Structures are given as structure tokens and as C-alpha cells.
Length: 114
Length: 114
Image (tube, rainbow over all chains, first blue to last red):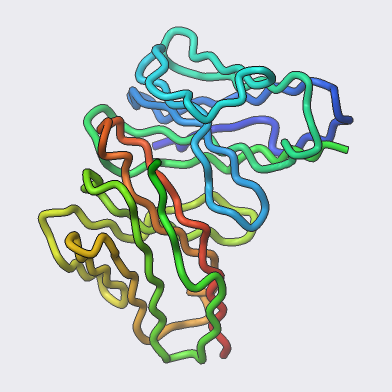
């Protein structure tokens, strides 16, 4: 079974530039999560989708972050404009319908903002 | 709001010794408590989980205990081996809304010395 796919794995940008991350969850998983993991900290939930609807985006900085999950499959997380404090690993995770239960994480996209 | 506290932040043990990591959570409605292991540069992976209807669960050298009254749970690793060296995260589900989202602790860096 293929795991959660993410790209790009690494991205370096200047502050005020924009960046987009892509995630393809495990086939058949209805729920998709984007987490931000700052170095030395635990993952923090940014947004949760159930199929193509948003379930929780209470910690998403909506003035600069946006996310979508078209057709209820893959998802894109965008940051515009980026700030220095956005430097982190952005982890995508998915889980099958019916929770709570295990989250399956991708390898993450490491963002460095200079 | 929902919060998970994890201690200690770092833990160093000799190979063969036991290691214990403790977490407390704030949301009394939480009913799912997983533990993830994250090796350097890798994705977090589930190693064991426990649900609120169980007080203890064991899987070979790993065990988790849960005290719902005190709202804390612990990970126990016996007969530690160098390959156990990693960052360990506890988590609790956001039970009040039962969306399946996980709130993570800050992480514990475990070093097992040969």
C-alpha cells in the first residue's frame, strides 16, 4: 500500500515570497491533516479536511496560509507571503473514516525562509 | 484550550535500562492516546496507542498506562536498545469535538547509550 506522498521535500525561499506544498493521501482515506512542526517541537495542527470540506482550521493563520482539497483527494497548502517564523516541516497526514485512530504521516516538506 | 504536556524533554539511558516518558492532557473528553516515534529527518510513526476503556496496553518491550482520573498517561520502554534512540511524541485526540485531530506533546529525545 502506498503511503502519504508529499512534495517538494525541501524548499528555500526569501521572506515575503510564496510557496505551495502538495499532498496525496493514502487511497481511500477520507480525512487529511496538515501539521506544522517547528524544530524541537511537536506537530501542530493547521487544518483538517473531511473529504473536501474543512473540519477544523482554528489554528491556520488565514492572513497568509490557505489550503484546499479539491475532489476530496490530494491537497495543497499555500503560504503567501512567507515570514521567517514559517520555517518548519509541513507534515501531511491522513486517516480512514471513523475516528479517533492512527494518523499516517508523509515524510514532510521542509521549508526554510531566509 | 486543549493541551498536552510531555516530560522529560530529553532522556539518556544505558542500553538495557528502562525508559519512562510521561504526559498529561487537559481535555477530559479525550479518549484516544497514541505514541509516535520520529527518527531524525523521518516521518512520525505510531508505536503504540491506548483508548480510554483500557488502563494498560503492552506490545513486547513497549507498554503504555493511562490514568483517566488524573489525566495522565505514560510510555514505558524496557530493555532499551540503541535503535530506540529517537524523539517520542505523545498525543491525545481533540475529544470535545471528536474530529479525530491529535494534539501532540512537545517531544522527548531519547538517547540509548551502548
